[in-house]
Image 1 (cartoon, rainbow, N blue to C red):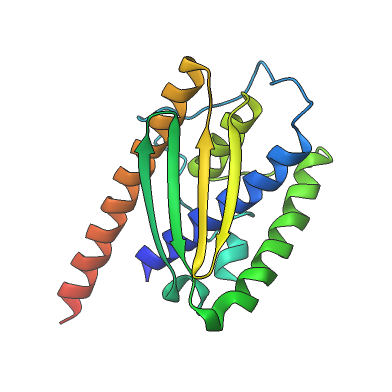
Image 2 (image 1 turned 30 degrees about the vertical axis):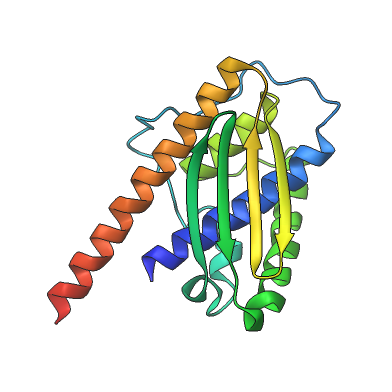
Length: 182
């Protein structure tokens, strides 16, 4: 369950960031952008489906996270995430996207919200000029976060590596919990 929750969270975050990126194309990057490094702040969870307002959008759609599959990879100019969404959950994903858009609109209007490490970092990367792209596929979506600036590429790749590491840790914790219940 944690695995699918994280997967769903990341997918929604990627979707949300893609929406923000489209609206911020012309805006200059903020100088105070907070890209959370690979050794992210200990007091901020990398994934937080309970407290992060963007992540909550995923968990609000019953069964969506549990049915999705997600993977992240480092690529030469950034990162790629591949998500698989079952056909019977596409409507739930559409609702999730709508909820995320509403949260992002609040953030863009200046409302302050406590985001998880992943959302904070991903949004900051977009503010630094990273290009977010989303490609809908028959079975889900492919999300790219790339740049042609070496310093931004490095930060995107750090973000991806942290995401991969944190996701693996969550899967291990979930497996340990599941095994101990047997």
